[in-house]
Image (tube, rainbow, N blue to C red; front, side):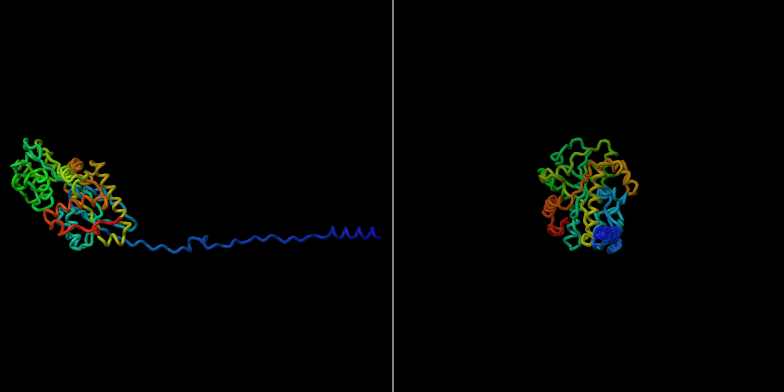
Length: 344
C-alpha cells in the first residue's frame, strides 16, 4: 500500500505545469533633456538692416574697392550701400545728418566732428599718407635744394600744408622764408600746370602723381613725405591720413555687424596691395574716374594699410598733437579723449 501511494504522488507531481508570467516590455520614460526639437522656442527673425557707407574718391575708395565691387555679406538681413564722392568736403554733412553709418574721412575731420558732439567713433585707419614732392628740376635732390624755390601745392592751412611745413622745419628750413608756396584751387589744377611746364616743383598726392609721371618723362620724385614723416617723428609709420568712422548707433545696436565689417575691411586692404592690377580693373569698372593702369601703378605709393583703433591710436595722437600745435582748430579745439577710439 505504501509503495502504491508513493507512485501516485509522483505521477501527480509530474503532471503539474508551472505558469510563467509573460515578460512585459517597459516603455522608456521620456526625460526632459531628450525632448524633440519641435518643443524648442522658435528663433526670432533677424531684423533687416541697411548700412550706408561713404568714401571720397582716390586712395580711400581704392582701399575698400574689393568691398565696393563684390559687396560681401556682413550677416543675414544686412544690406550695404556703397558710395564714392568726389570731395572729402561732402563727408561732414553725411555724418552730421546721420545719412552715413560708416565713412572714410580725413583723420582731422573725424576728430573735429567728434569734438562737436557727433556720435561717431574711430574704428581704424586705411590710408597712411599719399604726398610726394615731384620736380623736373635736375638740381633738386633733397631738402636743402628747396631753399629759394617756390612749390605749387593745395590746402592752405589744411593738413597737407601742416605736413609740409612741419617737415621743412624738421629739416632746417623756414617756411615762407627759405621756401615759398603757390597755392592752387584744388588737386585737379596741379597736374595740368605741371604737365604744361608752368610748374617745375609740386607737392602731389596719389594717384594724380602717377598720372603726371606717365605724361612727363623728365618728372621724378625727390621726396617721399611719408618716409620723411616717420623719420622726423621717430615712428614706425607715416601720418594717419584717412580713417574709418562708424556711428555710435550702429556700434551699440549691431556690434557683430561692425566686427564683420572691420574684418572685411582689413581683407580688402590686404587684397588691394596683393592684387593691384585687379584692383585697378575694379576701380575703372565702378566708373570712379580713374583708369585701371593708373590705379595699378599708384597703389604701391598709396600707403594702404589697415590698422584698427587700438593699433592706430599712438600714431593718431602724435599726429593730432602736431596739428594742434599749428592750430587747435585743425582738431576741433582739443585732443580726443578715450571715447573717440572704438573699444573692441
